[in-house]
Amino acid sequence: MKIVVAYKWAPNPQDASVGVDGAVDWSRAKPGISEYDPVAIELARRLAEATGGEVIALTAGPKSVDASMARKAALSRGFDRAVIVADDALEGAGTTELAAVLAAAVRHIGDVDVVITGDSSVDVGAKMVPTVLAGQLGWPAVAEVTAVSGSDPAAGLLRVERAITGGTQVLEITGPAVLAASTDAAVPRVPGMRDILAAGKKPVETLEVPALDVPASGTTVTVTATARPDLKARKGQLIDTADPAAAAAELVAALRADGAI
Amino acid sequence: MSINIWIVVAGDPAVGNLIDTARSLGGQVCAAVVGSRVVADTVAAGGVDKVVWFGEPGKAPVEAFATAAADVIEATPGVVLGASRASDRVLLGAVAARLQAPVLTAPSSVSAEGDTLVVTRSIFSGIAEETVTVSGPVAVVLDGGPIPVANPAGGSALMEEVSAVTLGMTVVETHSSDFEQVDLGAAPRVVGIGRGLKAPGDLAMIEALAKASRSEVACSRPLAEGLDWLHKDRYIGVSGQHIAPEVYFAIGISGQLQHMVGVRGATTIVAINSDPNALVFTEADYCLVGDLYSIVPALTDALR
View (cartoon, rainbow over the protein chains, first blue to last red):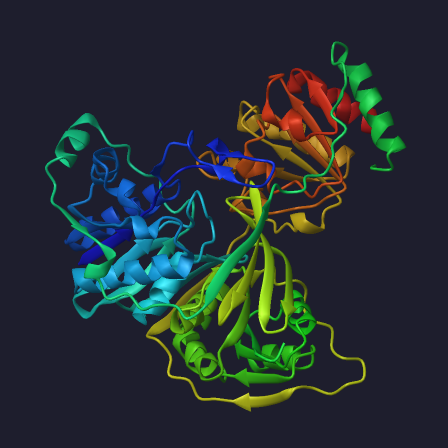
């Protein structure tokens, strides 16, 4: 099988700072493989090990996604090769634009049986890129996927387990398909020194957006204002805990006075 | 607004918030409903102008209708609203792709100014907000809200049944899990635990506090994913539940942004943590710096 994992090289908003005007400063936030993507990679590797085949890393973003450290961080996780769309035109690209570029890259790779993604990206967290990607390709999509196997790989049949409210469901899907892994679908392997050294030798194809057939959007989106979120003012009242029983009594009294309990 | 307003429904009629939002924009509201006839009827009676229904799904999951939903909406594109649930996102994603429409998530307000949509939304896990104006087709992901209440005057929207070509997907097995279902969103008080808790055996102490304070128990991500001490349903955070209880007890929780965005709606936050520099104290009303293993039992006694 030809398995693609679409991953993101992104910083964590926890490490960004936000100005009073709502401007986000990412300069101190170091990018990395997005939080949930290793889960997708693990699902892909298990599928490849069970059915035979290759696992291809795919990402799209500004030039920084093709930095040597970014490449190694991805390729040390067990990919056979990588396709990287690195183009500064993708700085701050929206969900639909990013999904359209990824879809074009999947077409460029050709004969892909399945694309697996993480649950959501650590920075944007919309959970929409995989579903829009599937829409761009006209393929079935399933989110909250907990396991995947090739029930009849030769016929392109996938057996996909997903979490639903109150349980799980098994689907049989005629591929190709896009699957978004649940956040806890698998425990990712940690790359060892040998994986990191081997990463540098794996083939990488780098593309720019004009090399791909990406449809344009007719919609204009204009940002008219940014702001810091209006957080509730909190009391921040310190309760001395030297005597736990007294602290507990003070807290309970305060909560009762507030009408909170 | 004179442009088309669509809502997409993926087998779950809990779309009251979508209908309310669509109505507030002031145009004709059409619903593209995947699911059983019961779901379509519920939506039709819930305040939309028209329902396009794709017929009984049989063994096809709702996702199998993604292309069909895109086909229908493509004929009269506009503003398309969908719920943030997994299957709803799949339908909305297919529609957004077909329209090459941008997708906006986590809105706090959606309004119309003429034919322009104005959306204020939370971005980057809630660290900032932006307001955007949108001209042209757009997809908006929002909280589905409750099942809509049928119009007391009776009456129902026009229903058009269309035959759909489905994608090759079949449900072959459905298993219900045996864990106790919990509705954290409805709980007036929630006790949230984090990595400050040392062992799964300590959950008994937490459950005693929950019982004494009539709270539900929740947790930060590591306890539900990785450690598996609690079911994932009880995980609060950016990719988990978002709650707004009257009281939230944050116990042994460091207060990482990814967790706190899920509890910022709480009326009162009590934080118990041994680290005086824990981030959680910056967002708490009552701050107890100390050993949770001595404070929690004392608090349980005081509440009894």
